[in-house]
Length: 530
Image (tube, rainbow, N blue to C red; front, side, top):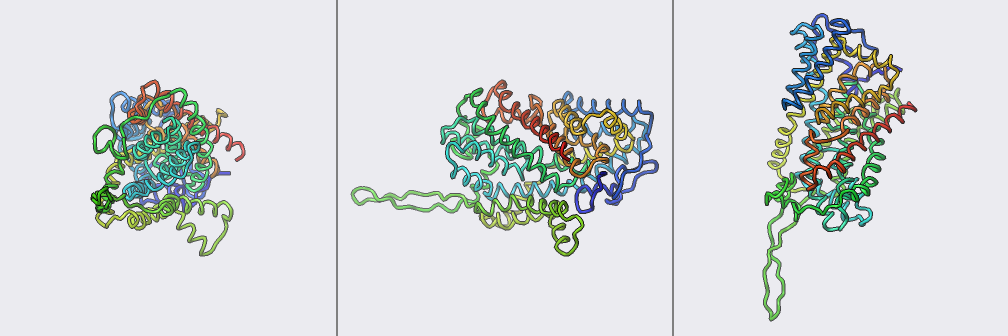
């Protein structure tokens, strides 16, 4: 059954194409997606051979610019997209307009979500809510259950946070837990890293899954539900199960970079803990405690109070709130698609991505701030600090949308769709391979996702809603395949855990491959039944 977008979700917004965002296409250009039906055919801008050559050369140029010349991915995508458009036969001004239309449409739908998500994640860290979740779960776990607990912590922290922020936040926890429990550090680190990376690859509102949802016109709620279901077995197998082998292959002591949480930030001996400044700001005043000593003497000892933080319940509710709202709306659409009434309108409103994540951000500004003892100035500073780090990500995501629109407007997308359909190869497998190749070449999961999503977007037109969501997950699985020396995450893990290059390959690279291959297997299996 053809995929018919609905106006209440991201796919509906993208399906409106340019007109939904007040944009107009230049003469001779047609938008691939149209609401409520299949897309009109796009007149190719040149012969098939010219289109294929332009696409191949453009992708190679993007990869070379990023990997060899070390050009920022945003610039590389802009150059590559415009080169593809002009090389495929578009007039230069039409190529620029096509790229701008795609950039604007993608930023309209994805940019707001990424910004709100970044604010929520920053409040989670600065208020101490993340600390509360971690400390509560670790304290209530037995030694044998610690690998499973760390996998859960990685997933919970990974749900609202960018990978790099979550990694730096988790490292002091990993080291501290390993030192205090005596459990080999790989049994602690691997499950936590798997939980974090799996959420980054499969579950919105991370930028990668979000831009893939937007680009291929998938339903965000359905993709979120499928992503969570897929993530559970992947985390179990690549996390606690694989950790047993990783601990035997790489038997190293916990590094000394953190003698206590946040110590590295103050001593300069390791990576800065992003939560440390917030912890110090939330500490209450020092008190004096009288300790009785022999001969009737007393000694006054300063007792430094623990940082204030929200309760475990408040922190957990905040993390899960947007997920529950979006899942509820997706379930309603699946179970009662023709339902009407006030409750339907309310549920659809609350479950729309911008509203759900916006509610979570407001919840954090109020309840996380109250629990963490943050005043209005501290909340404002936290929200302000959340936005600069995501500027590069937003530009890459927008450029990926522009690249996708150029592929569509030149007719290259249609050529790719026809070739895949005539080959008889699974669309999901093709999506994974394309994403994995770009990931291995560039080292960037985000670039792999936006590039693969742009290439696969025309093919998604003939897929049902569940199949389109599986396409997003296949792209996400490919985007984390074979992390190696051109990936910043490879060096972050190596530096934080104190492993050699070879040991990092045996642990981090293998676990990323496991996430990718297991994710692909789950997607292909689900595709058999849909």
